[in-house]
Amino acid sequence: MIKISAAIIAKNNEREIAACINSINGVDEVIVLDTGSNDKTTYVASGLGARVYYYRWEDDFSAARNRCLEYTHNPWILSIDTDEILETPVEAMYNLLRENFTKKVISFPIADREKTFWGARLFRKSLCHYEGEIHEQLNVNPDLYTDEIKIWHNPSPNHQKDPLRNIAILRRVVEKGNTSQRDIFFLGVELHAARQYDAALYWMQYYLQIAPRTQNYTSEVYYLMADCYCNLHRVSRAIDCLMKAAESNPEMKCVYEKLSQLTKDEKWDEKAKTATNVNVLVLR
Image 1 (cartoon, rainbow, N blue to C red):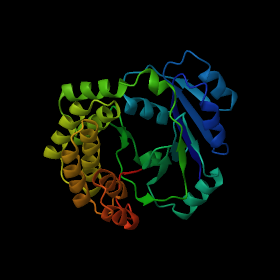
Image 2: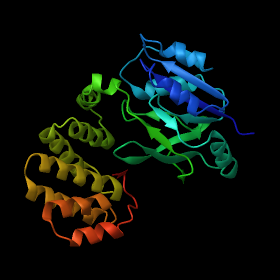
Image 3: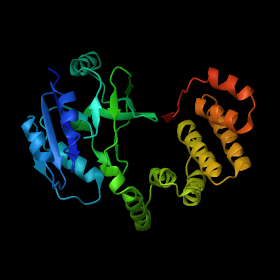
Image 4: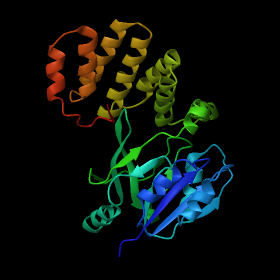
């Protein structure tokens, strides 16, 4: 018999947690790990049937998620955030697991108003744990990618209250040494999102120096570098980066759309029409 525990970490999410929990109604268990709410988050969650536990926040997302897993009781885990909702009927998730019982980690699309990316959110508890203080990931790679399950992400207003939190955590990780290539990548991503374009370019260029060239990550870095250069009014450098992104992954549609915008050359529109977005890290 398939049994699933939903694992949620929360802090001051009284506005969005009800929609999250209601969207997963039908899973065998909902565990909420509260990391210091001073609003009605825990009251709302427990009122909807979730089991609530408390944890002192340590600026380490993996530590919190792994602690949350300790409170779960079922073989399969659905990891979902308070500002996300499961768009797919819960029963479809159970059917998928029955049909793919030998799989270990299942990845599926997570979308918001601007982009879509793949997230490994359904996995066997006995085989997996989280690693990385921020932008945490499982220690086991997905062995199934499917669009039969989908999550919608509606970013919490709390992100706007402390927009530089992730950068501060990543800088601390870098300063401690023994930094992973993934940490460097996400530091560049966060700096780009914070519109600190010169700093973002520094760390993205460093990432390209130390990391092996992979189709999905390398093309994404070059695309973000191009956007940095555009915002710094250095269009020729932006075009150079877009060309390198296209060289790394010829199927990245947004690269051709950006090239068309910058060069006014219709040939890029034709390229965009046929691009398949295979091995693209983030769909825009």
